[in-house]
Image (cartoon, rainbow, N blue to C red; front, side, top):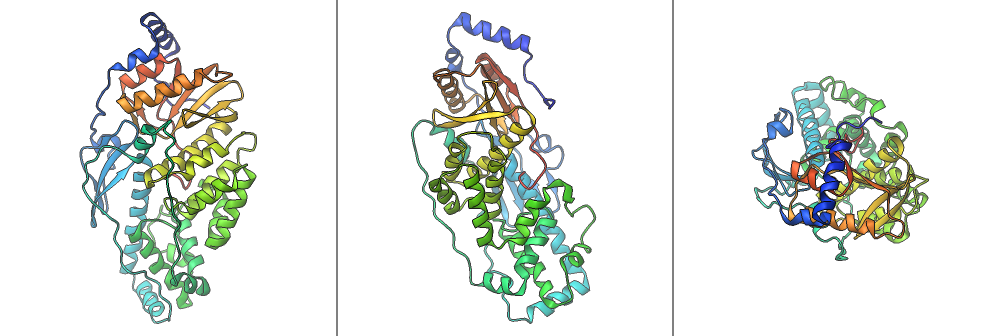
Length: 421
């Protein structure tokens, strides 16, 4: 597969490595650090910083790993950590605005009135997302990297359901909600309360007797429906046709097929920072790598996620790793190096494949990657090279320092199309 961008040519990389050998170990280059640059949201988002119901405020900050956005909506200002979560939220807002527009259709409003007359609760009590304008410049991913090698374990707890879920299942509304959400390209189990409530309300018209999901989507703007070819039909059907409990059981089976331990399966199942769909996506992505050993290492770390942005980072990393294994180079096994899972390719090269947004040479970044570099060199059978691949950008200083390690760098590698952004 063609690389979209290679930060330094082989010739320049060789020169940098040679210079490093003359001036001492690579760690000598880590004595100088930089402050992550602040960016214009128009540049980061290619002009999509404004849209119906939202505005991404300037500037966009970073902690050296992920970008930190301030998203203005009708609910206030929400801090969002990471390109992936921002893309997820913007897709949710697009669907929310479209579903809200159904209120302009008289026949749909009549359907809502008929549904409301039935003895089924279809709207949860109003709970808004916590919003704020905190200017902290550390993400959950940044905190994870700062803890590498310290053996810190995250405590997680499970989530319970609500009594209204049973009523929705009996009337078929729950199935309609899942079908509607998947057709629109959003997670039926979204954490975004305004969209969750709107999906419930919209799907409730199917209980009126004359409405189907297809009838609902026919009223929506063209281009909003997700093309079925963008996501595997079997996974789509899995999400739509499974109740939450059935999906959890099938997710656990997929994890077992991937060689994940019961302890890690339980830990992920109880983790409140992944949706039910996301846990299933992770399990099936791991199951899709049958030739890779020790996937348990990745699953265990995913179960430790103690924040929403860190959980989504772990999910994106699994998706990216499966794509790499399938399209770039086959992986052999996973090694835990200084507390971080690193893939070793079948050809003996280490693959550090990460969904990072903007890598800057901060002290934490320098310490983390220097530890990985030294840890890889200390393995009984050190890799013959390192392929460092990320979904975002690097500052010139970060690219120079990593190239000095002898790593091959690829930036702006695209996430595959699908439900994980």
